[in-house]
Image (cartoon, rainbow, N blue to C red):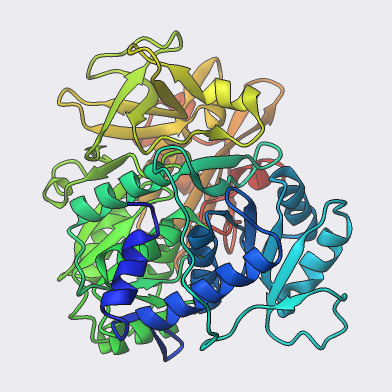
Length: 510
């Protein structure tokens, strides 16, 4: 089965089954499928065909879900782009992937209109919203609910046809398009849904952008199982999100550490009836022990899964909930249908108890980076079996004697101070142990004597106080001396990407 087949099967067999809840509006499987077929028909009428790239530049809404399944039904490749993306990056993605179509919203014209004006190749543009706002000629309306269209189908090969191009954040240069086949995404979807124990009666709350693979897979997993998704635009107003979760009787809550930090600083959460919530998941960055304790206190009835993944293969590891109390700093072991191990700088497999780069082998591993053979060769390398390719993650981990994995740092984030290598994560964990600390990020800054000095950016809980001297003294008491920060800056918030990850490059440049 291709990535979209199970969704259309549910729509055909149970058209009235609830699929999406958005700001109180309900959308059944049959309605979303009808929209998707209408999108596919309009794309085909605009000259889009199998293998063509369709950029989706939309907020979390039914239009985005229908557009991605419409592109898949046509045999095209969907390219999700966060609606907060600026014109320069959007233009780069449109050019880089050779897009033949853009599906967007009239309200986002300030970004996409100048971006498409710079593209030389023909580009079909389908837009939701009010098109009578001085937009250029040739913009076609995105089909609305109730549009009549014959179902679109295409012959596809699960291990050869691309389903999506998902662009990385580009924090170290131009964004790279991760090529994912139907097999890559089906394999990841079924492994993750399997170990989480998701089922068709689940109601998943998703305030993560669907243009972020963590958010995207909430819809893909739900649509595969016949479950439903309660979509939010963001988690900027956490009390509003909790009210929605209580009203919709949400059972699954995927989040990232920055979201959980917001909740930890709130009061009055007990007034929300979240008794239906049975499962909480975390990825994007590892949870600290203080985060884990706080989540358990806030949601005692829910099971927490701490996980690790990357766009190039979706998900890598998960920590079984019964191990949280035993090894809270671990992100677990590899998920089903996949192998993982650590390698040294020469690519040799390391035994348990070592530190090295995480290597992933499995059918969820990407096909490569779009039109970027140099970066592809750096990350995908031949394995022991002729023809296989292994993904070198670029992330350093350590294992304990039993093989449980602990994140150390991005290889590029390691700080070299006083001739020693320092893991920012280890320093952050130590500072997080201070009760006054809500969030922390540690970076290396240039220093004439040390090479790089360690600097900590700290966000305190409301009403809490802490001094630079107290933070440094605490670190000296719990870490080796060369790991203690030289500088501590107290800030109101940390800069984050649209996927909730802390922008350490922005901090290092301050």
